[in-house]
Amino acid sequence: MGTNLTPSNIPTDVPEADELAEAMEAQWREVESALRHSKQRMVAGEHGSPTEYEVGEEVWLDAKNVKLKTLSPS
Image (cartoon, rainbow, N blue to C red):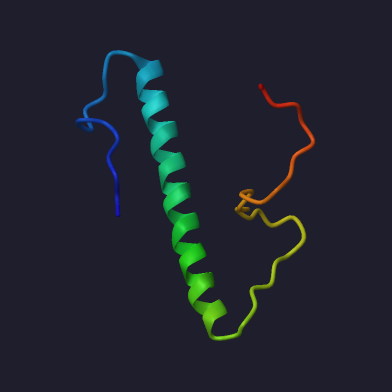
C-alpha cells in the first residue's frame, strides 16, 4: 500500500519540509497498519473469537456515540 506523500523522493533544500514529509509518511504508515489490524479483528470477530488486549496497549476508539460534557458553540 505504500503511499508517497511527496512528488519525489529527492530531498529538498528545506530540512523542515523534509522532516514534515517524513513525519507525515510515518503517520500514514501507522494509520494503514491500524486499518489492517482493525480489519483482521473484524473478520476474527465474525467467527466468535473476541480480541484480547494487554494493559498499556494502544487502541483506536470510535467516539461517534460518546457524549462529552463540554460546552459547544451555539
